[in-house]
Length: 191
Image (tube, rainbow, N blue to C red; front, side, top):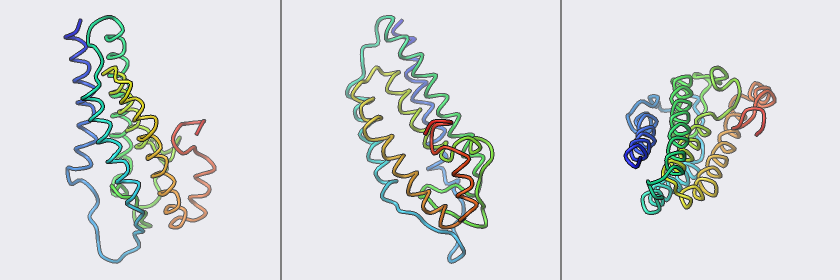
């Protein structure tokens, strides 16, 4: 049974590879000088990276026991949540196309994306990455890593979402205000 737990844990970690390759694989939009692209604050992005660094340290240092039925159930549930999070990130990133950037930005030329997962929530990538981290913490039975997800990762994504909201409102005005009234920030129908 411990082999299956290890395989599920490895799969939950591999789920992080797709979104990571999108971020560091050089697929971001080409930047031009001038233009009408507004740039956001990098501080929430740096806070995200710090939170994930602490998360992975806790995940490695405080992984739970890989034996027993509870470990198998947690590994299976965690792997499924991580894979669902990765799928949401990849689908949302594909929907953004040229409008995506690591640091929040808004560009009249790229437009305001309101299709795909963005029909339901304004920041599905942040939800997907939070789900990925939550799934990995569950898969590894790491309660300290779970605490990092709840106390650092999710709040830094909320901070980042609000910073991005200001930029989008400034760039798209009433169109973004209408979109905000129709959707939730990170959790469909709730938040």
